[in-house]
Amino acid sequence: MKATLTLKKNLHLKGLAMGLAAAMAFGLGSADALAKDINSRIIRFGYGLADTSPTGQATRFFAEEVAKLSDGKMKVKTYGNGALGSDEQMQSALVGGSQEMTFVSTAPLAGMVKGFGVFDLPFLFDDEKVAYAVLDGKPGQALLDALPAKGLIGLLYWENGFRDLTNSRHPITKASDIEGIKLRVMQNQVALNVFKALGANAIPMPFTELFTALETKTVDGQENPLSTIQTSKFYEVQPYLTLSHHVYTPFVLLASKKWWDGLTADEKQVIQEAAKTSQAYQRKISQEGNVKAMAFIKEHGVQIDTFSAAEKQIIRDKVKPVVEELRDAIGPDTIDAVVKAAAEAQKGA
Ligand code: TK8
Image 1 (cartoon, rainbow, N blue to C red):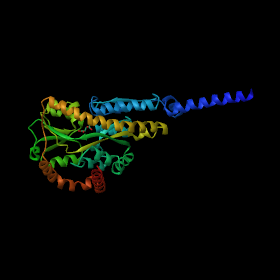
Image 2 (tube, protein in one colour):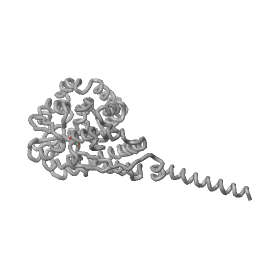
Image 3 (cartoon, rainbow, N blue to C red):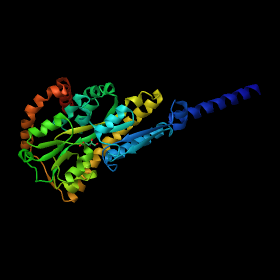
Image 4 (cartoon, rainbow, N blue to C red):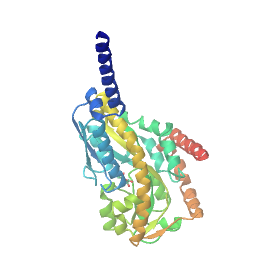
């Protein structure tokens, strides 16, 4: 009799243990979240792109991941279309602690960490794979590591993408066609000097002011990836597009350090895990978005041109002196590390 009771008790305990193990193994949120030190939080995540953009979609994916991993306790509220300000204004809001998260292009960050200006140098990366190898490797991490001293946590890189030129004046098929174009550029010394070297009348301007500036012809042109040209509706006021792919701009997924330092270790882990899962998703839909945007822009009557290899070489030659001059403005070690890592990644491709 006694033996049977013991056997039953053991079987019962074993069943319980297996049930809990299964719950943990299948990551059933509630078992995990309850066991973790996670508080109810609202996270304000502002960004400049249209909420219909692929990266706008990625912020909602990120919000769902955070909710899943925190059992709904950490709620990310996303605000697209520049609703919370320009990249520069949101960077400052994170430093001050009045906003928790954003993604911004590396160009505006160069004002805080000069090394981020390296990504505004033309023709650095042959394709996205090379860019990911550099960004997710030591050179990219070294730049993120410089952000906490400025009040920002650089979680990882998302993709803005290869930039293409649009304008409302005339087709641009040769390097010399850029001369005299009033071209909006992102607000840093590298982007400004590079396009001045190409003869453009380069005008630094926040992204949030760009559509109106194009519509009112305050500027003739701009440069951004295809999915931005579509979703921010630049194609409506830019009849000429040149597939220049002249610069690859990364986004940095940022958190406010003031806010971050107040999170528990488990809450930080939720954000970091969600960021990592979202990176693969964001890069995938970013590339898919550019393919869709190309077809969309073509259908909407925009004239699409390209630069020949010879014209691209003329561009490289024209900006070479400026790139040399900018070595100090960016940091020679950063430039050399990025160029070396890109060459290695390209060889391994
Ligand atoms: C969006 C910007 C934009 C960037 C620019 O907030 O400013 O042209 O390419 O994507 O970060």
